[in-house]
Each structure stands twice: as C-alpha cells, then as structure tokens.
Image 1 (cartoon, rainbow, N blue to C red):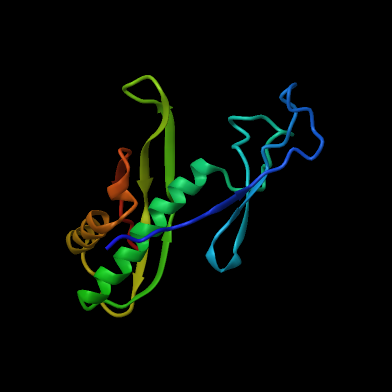
Image 2 (cartoon, rainbow, N blue to C red):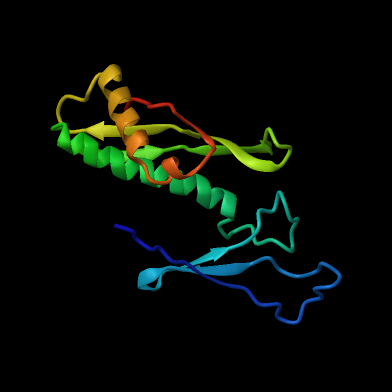
Amino acid sequence: MAHIYTAGIHWSLDGADFAANRYSRGHTWTFDGGVEVPASSSPSIVPLPHSVEAAVDPEEAFVASLSSCHMLWFLDIARQAGHVVTAYDDAADGEMKRNGEGRMAITSVTLRPRAAFEGDAPDMAALTALHHKAHEACFIANSVKTEIWIEPRTS
C-alpha cells in the first residue's frame, strides 16, 4: 500500500532584484493540518541578509526528520519490549561535505538520543539493541544514502 505525503512551498520575489542575486531565500512550508513553518536557505550557504537566520533550513530539517523518525520508532519498539519511556531528547547533527562523487551532501548524521524510563532502564546493550531496531525500521533512514550513527546516551 502506497502513502502520499505532501508539503506546500511558497516563495515570492516581493520586489527584490532577482537578476542581481539580491533577494530573500525566506519562504514557507505548509503541511497538512495547516501547520506553517518559516524556512530559508542556511546562512552558512547564502549569507545574511538574503537568508533568514530564524527560519528552518533544508539541511536542519533533514537532520530533524531523521531524528524524529528514529524517536517515533524507538518509542514504539521500547513500548513493545515492556518499557515505559517518560522523556526523550536528542542532540543530532549532520555534516555537510563533498561526497564520493564530488558533490556537496549531508554525508553523515549522528543521533545522540537520551531516553528516560519509568522503573528500571534497560542496560546499555539492551538500549543499543532498541536503537538498532528503531534505525532499521525508520522510513527516513531507509530512504537516504547518508551514513547515520546512533550514539545512545544514558540519563
């Protein structure tokens, strides 16, 4: 069974000088349910003022998407294993550099999840196994060529 996921992207020139490359890269992502997210190019790629520092850039969204997908699978797999997760945090990052074909790409993402449990927490071996299962199940991780590292942290 196929599922279709949609995102609306809106940008407008708003009178800026497009030919001179003096236009804002700020735009809006719109998702089902009406959620709007301010988006932009990364200021490390397109310098200010033509990027919007307070907006989400595609590279950050990519890292967040991997982290979020991993977390959702982890919560379900931990629940199925009989654990009660009471909190979950991640300090994820992605590294952009030239890939083997010489193109710029997010070549690796490192997730650093920390889960808190009610009662006895799984030991590091069991925690690592839960994260491995979550990584194997994650739709987003299964969709990309980027290396993804999982470094579980204890509470």
